[in-house]
Image (cartoon, rainbow over all chains, first blue to last red):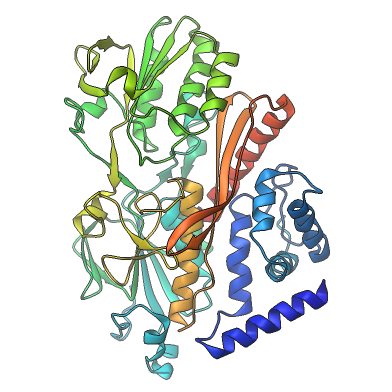
Amino acid sequence: MAIRISLACSLMAAFAAAAVPAMADGAVAAYLAGTCSTCHHPSDKSAAMPALAGRDATELIATLQAYRTGARQDAVMHAVAGSLTDAETAEVAAYFAHQEPAQ
Amino acid sequence: MTRWTRRRFGAAAGAAALAGIAAPSMAAAAARLVIIGGGPAGATVARYLSRASSKCQVTLVEAEPRYHTCFFSNLYLSGLRSFESLSHGYDALQAKHGVTIVHDKVTAIDATARRISLASGGGLDYDRLVVAPGIAFRWNAIEGLDEAASQAVPHAWRGGAQMQLLRRQLEAMDDGGLFLMSIPPDPIRCPPGPYERVSMVACYFKREKPKSKILVLDSKNSFPKQELFQDAWNRLYPGVVEWLPIDFHGGVKSVDAVARNVAVANETFTYSVANVIPPHSAGTLALEVGLADDKGWCPVDPATLESKLVPGIHVVGDAIVPGEMPKSAFAANSQAKVCAMAIDALLGARDPYEARFFNTCWSFVGIDDAVKVGASYRIVEGKIKAVEKFISKVGESAETRKQGARQAEAWYAAISADAFG
């Protein structure tokens, strides 16, 4: 998994270097994470749309992958998870993992 | 408001053109980003631009002191949610996110001078402008239905006073009355919304006015989530809802607010309470400043949400031609994030990231009974296209529907915080 992500990242970097500079990593992660924030309130403690800030990155990646494969069933999350590449999934997970959990 | 040195972007919007601007002077000044319209689209753009990686000064111009959401207002009509719970202010955007809030009405946009004029007399210069004008109604498309008549026959298709008016009328109606609803042709804001309204008014009647009926005069022959809604109407409100497609009635021709009549091709119906939603166009400002095409909607480049008609101005939300996306708060919020990301990229002379869009429309059909439809989207050959679609099914368990209702409520809280801070 880690190898695939780093490979994808270096490929992206190689392509980007050839043209107009790509957006900064942080800006991309923040942008992609925006899709999650439409439904996941930063301090929601309910099971319906649980808060994502401060969650373990590995756990978030595993959860998104489970939604993508159908191991976890949810039509909305299947579409969300399916819209992200492995590299993007890792970026989004890292973004939320680095956020302070809301009180 | 602080005035920065006059510096403007080139007329061409591409990143390469922007990259040609001298780097040292770019670093010195914050870009002036002005957003007009404080609904879910405009507020989300403001909030996301406020944390952009580029140096910028974000100003949101909105005439009203508070925003009342149209989404979730059917729950208010049903008595299941308070009016106050649908009301959002702009204090957090200013205090927590550094957005300058200007409560004023925009009277003109000078796209060449890059300046907007305000009703109070002043103006604002901008480097990039985002317009989120929402929708306007095509008054007089139905005889007798002008803006003044909407004080007697509400559209209730914007949050706020119109919603309160319809609620009062429903509360004042005698048991055994007829609630008549007229639904306009596409494109409309919140395509499943009218049918959620039918469901939620039926839900209110079941509790409070069980002898009352609902007549729906539709401008369409089919509608979103039709099977799901009609299943719910038969299951939860048998004999209450009569839905007539346009091929059956021929279209609503006129409204007489004094006689309380609505006329279709060959028949006149007398109502107790009527909710006639007029056909829509993009918001008035978009029409006035040339952002709308001859059909009344705003064409945009979906990768940046920049207008195809006026360079340097971006348009987001219900006013745009959205490809396969519906006009919804979720869609507006999703477009707003693409727009903010693209503006941030353009300011830094970088290529915008590949746009992703998402939408889910939850509809309440009963108490603890919500259904959903939605999709993920990407840009294919210059247009927004659905990638993966999903929809609830008839016959789902009560537990699934209850979970849908909890998800919808959580979404409401989240999108409100996401837009208004």
